[in-house]
Amino acid sequence: MNKEFLYTLLDSMSVSGHEIPLQKKVIEERYLEDKSQDETAKTLGLSQVKVSRIERQGKETMLHFINS
Image 1 (spheres, rainbow, N blue to C red):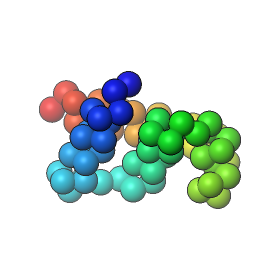
Image 2: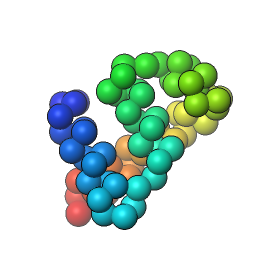
Image 3: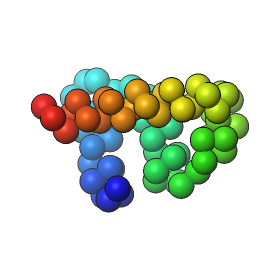
């Protein structure tokens, strides 16, 4: 995924009033900082399974913004 596009998409999520901070943080760490789910989990004090679920929700949120 193009990092510049991802930055723009994450910014638009904030501007629209639908900011979901934990989803954004997980997406940023996973795709912009290139961390594994396990590394992200340790950074945020979550389980890897929880990071996986939040990441999936974040992707669904981004798709919503792309399609609207």
